Amino acid sequence: MNNKQNIILIGMPGCGKSTLGKALAKRLGRDFYDADDVIVEQEGKTIPELFASSEDCFRDAEVRASQFLAHKSGIVVACGGGVVKRSENMDIFKKTGTVFFLDRSPDDIVSDVDVSTRPLLKDGKQKVYDLYDERIDLYRNAADYCIPNNKPMEAVLDDFEKLIKEID
Ligand SMILES: Nc1ncnc2c1ncn2[C@@H]1O[C@H](COP(=O)(O)OP(=O)(O)O)[C@@H](O)[C@H]1O
Ligand SMILES: O=C(O)C1=C[C@@H](OP(=O)(O)O)[C@@H](O)[C@H](O)C1
Ligand SMILES: [Mg+2]
Image (tube, rainbow, N blue to C red; front, side, top):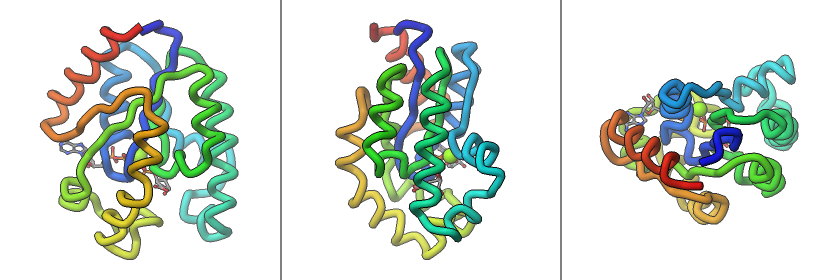
């Protein structure tokens, strides 16, 4: 894969985008950005504060962060889980990046994610299953490639790195 092309990770909250994205960037010697951190920095507000205004307010900020990130080159980006809810985000990222769907089962997600600290999951574990059903088609349709996250992280990173090296 062209090393200027950005690597964009999408998937459910708790699927491992931030953790695996950071580790992948390290392996590839690329810069890593967590889109949620960029939003907090650009807006000067926390994610719960933005959601407290409205989800739309957070989603507007997410579009601004997507635009900022897509102007960079050769980076790895962990998106927020809901980035696919606005199709313009995917159009923005695809101009300079390849989109990878990190597919982790809702059962694995609920087994180790602290739902109380994530605004959208604050109502409990059932929300993970509801979101998965709501979004699975959006993730599959937005993705250029799917990476199953169903084994130890180092093994998933090996698969990811191999795929990156294989594709043009
Ligand atoms: N393959 C895996 N094996 C074990 N734990 C994992 C795996 N993938 C993700 N996790 C864990 O799941 C949690 C959520 O990951 P995180 O990177 O915060 O997800 P996201 O950014 O997609 O919301 C973290 O504690 C992470 O270590
Ligand atoms: O799924 C979502 O709509 C969201 C996921 C979060 O990111 P993670 O996927 O990193 O948890 C964060 O962007 C925000 O709370 C909204
Ligand atoms: Mg994250």
